[in-house]
Image (cartoon, rainbow, N blue to C red; front, side, top):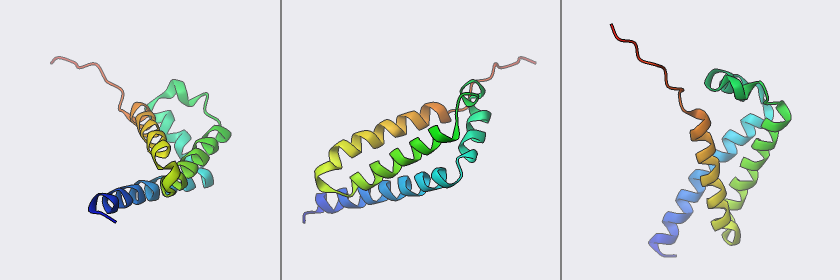
Length: 101
């Protein structure tokens, strides 16, 4: 294996471990994500159900497993990037209007 191959393996392993940890936590206790969404995006939180959270958790687990298998690595990397974009969109703090003193 070349240095690049090792680097890809390490980065994929790290991303897979984060996705496995996050996915398993959401699968076991979906209420925590519902509470976090209620704080970040109240309009979206009303429509989120535990089944949808568990579906997201299963997606994270599948992507994590696919990152560790060479033939599916590229498509899993694209899916992981898409998950990251979704998390950053919903995880951003809503802007608050500034008040002048």
